[in-house]
Length: 86
Image 1 (cartoon, one colour):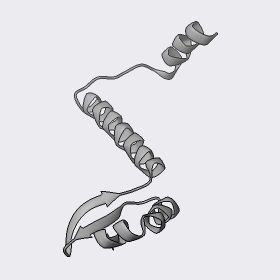
Image 2 (cartoon, one colour; image 1 turned 90 degrees about the horizontal axis):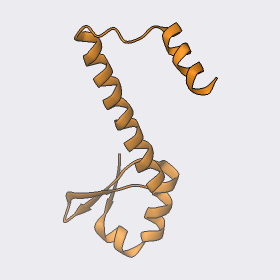
Image 3 (cartoon, one colour; image 1 turned 45 degrees about the vertical axis):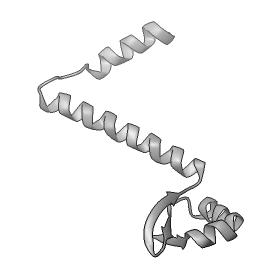
């Protein structure tokens, strides 16, 4: 976990920005010694958002499976794709 003060962010934004791009993880910013905000590169944020979306889709699919939905077989899936792209 990387922690920087708000003073560091204010006085040396470039270094904090460079660090955010280097580590690709959140940087916690403190204010008066307490946690205040988190900053990260746009690339890292977008990857994290895509991961959350994928996890939500997998959880929804797992719920359907547990509820007894069987889905489609591999051969049915192949037939559908061939109709679309074949």
